[in-house]
Image (cartoon, rainbow, N blue to C red):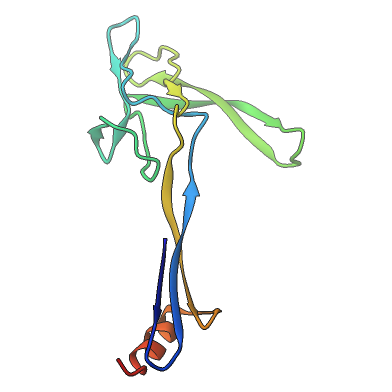
Length: 136
């Protein structure tokens, strides 16, 4: 998105925003309800409420499950150890795999806003100042 305005002084002011592709191959499947063998249901939540739709800009959790660390492993392209584990039902301890899915269409979120005056990148404060100093 670009907004270009030319003032009567001849300065060109531009504002544009990056668009970030957040299409996921592995995201919470919010429409899936898991039920373990003891009958306990497990669903994705956002902010303490049951998730009804996927939004790539929020954090999802499954509060009915607890993550159990099984150990550590090293990845081929990294020298740091990474914890590995599994999820269990908080009530009965049954091992449960949270449901994930992939996006079937591309998803985007708004990114950084950029400001330019006469083709030169400036801070928002400088952009606002210079724009306020231009005759209208």
